[in-house]
Length: 111
Length: 126
Image (tube, rainbow over all chains, first blue to last red; front, top):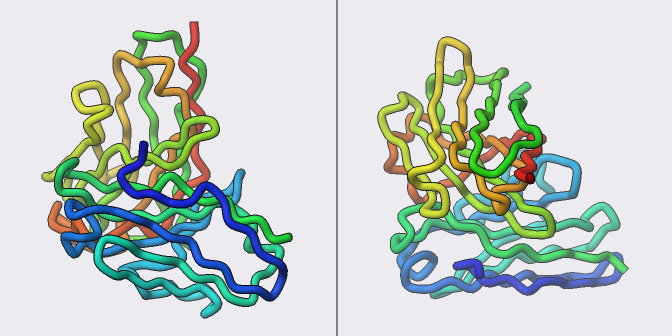
């Protein structure tokens, strides 16, 4: 059971917009700790997509965006492409656990 | 370019020990903290441990506290994960990752990792 809750799967057709939610609590996101997002395609290294809630590393398309409100955060992907298929994880810090925590992951399928 | 290469994985019996290594290149290793993260088969990512850029701060997840120890050797640009008393549930792909921010001495709780390796597989089985 992950401290950060994500939907197990989302899907969308090419060109559509999808969002992935990440629900935390007062001991992590709700305490003001930043949220980060990773894309993980099996067999490859996880890739940082969004850091400090809304920022994109160099090379990440602006189709990817992040937001946060209260104890939750979201990753939005617009203009879905086949290459976006993979697993997506949110990550934050939890004061109760005194460590970084990941969401359970969301599998994105491009129909 | 920044590169992290994990090694040392393999098949080991329950109760035995294993030491993983992560060789870093392409960046100023001495100025960045480093992490270990794992992914069990069919499961999500699990953060395991962090060590500060200078090695003075270490933190381990509750699930491995007392059994796993992170360390670093800046003369070799390498971090390690010493894993003792291994359990079947420790079977996973183990990744090392680099702190996004430099000079994090254990106070960068809210930040993250920006570069990861490809991982090394650990199988604990009798």
